[in-house]
Image 1 (cartoon, rainbow, N blue to C red):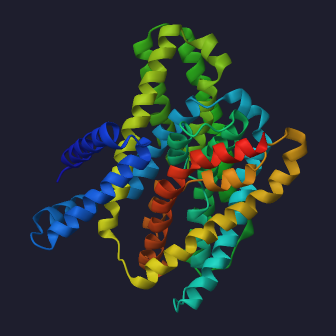
Image 2 (tube, rainbow, N blue to C red):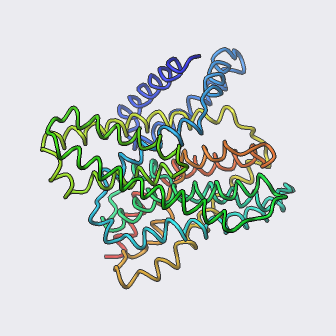
Image 3 (cartoon, rainbow, N blue to C red):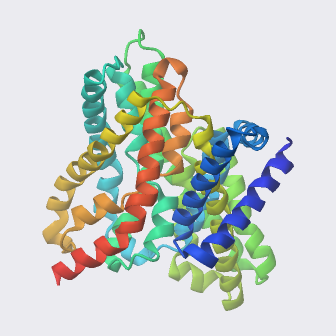
Amino acid sequence: MDYYAIASVLIVLSALFGYINVKFLKLPITIGLMLITIVFTIIIVAIGQFDDTLLLREKALISQIDFKTVLLDIMLSFLLFAGALHTNFNQLKIQRWPVFVFATLGVLVSTFLVGILTFYVLQILGLDVAFIYCLLFGALISPTDPIAVLGILKKAGAPKKLETKIVGESLFNDGVGVVVFLTIFAIAAKPEAAIELNEIAKLFGQEVLGGVALGLILGYITYKLLKSIDDYEVEVIITMATVMGGSLLAHHWHLSAPLAMVTAGLIVGNDTVRKNSMSDITEIYVDKFWELVDVLLNTVLFVMIGMEMLVLTFRFDYILAGVIAIPLVLLSRYVSLWLPIKFFDKRLEFVKHTNLIMTWGGLRGGISIALALSLTPEMYRELFLVITYIIVVFSIIGQGLTVGPVIKRLSKDAD
């Protein structure tokens, strides 16, 4: 199948499953689409025991999609810009230091905790996996997914201060998480080579600081262009050009495209910038356009995640490792957030039970699966893919369905 045919099938399935969700299930779109797609795939597998025509076609479809490239190099920039565009900039400015620490130190601590715990669990299960590969798994599973978080928190009713922390952290920590993953990946790919700390620091600094700097420049240029004209059609196209052109530049210069897009989106979406650069009609069209892009790409992404189960190698020990990894990942996240929350608590008056809510509300999604797909066979790709998939499915469906009631219950206890 060519790219147009694949895209057409995914859009048709997304529309169909989206309709079923809105008409009957009435779940948040990310949860509903993933659940329906998984059920649909299981039905196809069951039918395949008698007639494998549909099963083979679905496998062929999902096998032709380069999930990693589609998500990390194309979709992620659009989704992060859209998410940042509608984030409360003033609240984020107040919460900037805890968000920064959560997205950097929190990701690093979680990476090492998950890596250490996973290493010992796999040894107990008789899976002799080198520690560096477990650390690599820790890096890919530690960042929370802004795509999943943003879609579900809209309906969860979290206090604004808390919502800003969760959303702000998830917008930035995936960019940091990808850089941490790439750094450990480079070490794991050449285990015999000496570890050059200067090179690691340079890579980290170039990706993170360079990405943020590019985002600041893109945001400023976009603001100036929007301010100089009053034509909503062209202004919407300018915001698109910011994302597409900015992503190309980030990839060309080896900077973090996710961090660049988050930074640019926060600047363009800032209330002060909006008032100075957009007319009322332009603001409406820009917001509605990016909301539509957000929903469309979200639906396609979670349909792809649901279908991805067809290309996994499900072995009993892999599944058992995945189930055991769920509480370990949650525990690691709780511990990684504990110290920063204690440090900033008195200064910023955190909502009571912030750590519990941020732990349960820190959902994993497509980014973790995309990074797991980039592992080589020598890095136990199939094992970590299954573990990652199980954690993501539990996170989106299990945590996603209960995060609203958990927030309401814990917020009520805090009153």
